[in-house]
Image (cartoon, rainbow, N blue to C red):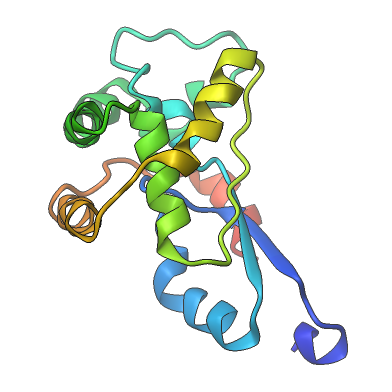
Amino acid sequence: RANAVQPVAALQSEYSMFSRELEDEFFPVLDELGIGLVPFSPLGKGFLTGKIDTATKFAEGDIRNNLPRFQDEAREANANLVKRIGEIADAKAATPAQVALGWLLAQKPWIVPIPGTTKKHRMEENAGGADVDLTADDLKSLGDLLAQVPVTGDRYTPAMQATIDR
């Protein structure tokens, strides 16, 4: 409805290999109306970098301390997904983060991810995601992987999710 009043240029929402809820409901509408998607947390709040495991300790005040997907049991369950992404990355001489960003860019031409970082070398690494050559076979393998290996743990706590779903 908003697009009828004033054309919407882009939607900003969470989207990554780790959070794909938008695909069924929102993608057809974005396609139909020619609206871009600017996904935040395209690296699953860091999980898809391969740098987070059950031994990782987040700083006090880091939101991930409270998120269900970042509790020890969920991190352990989700490690297989990241391990398999890492294997594809190794074959491409890339990092898991670059494969995750390359996958995002390959989904739709109107997706422009905004990965956040505080480190220059991570910014450069993230930019390299645009150069990862993911073939149709690679994308099929990743799609099959995402279908076979479900993400464990909710994105947010119930209270946080309630503020999103209103």
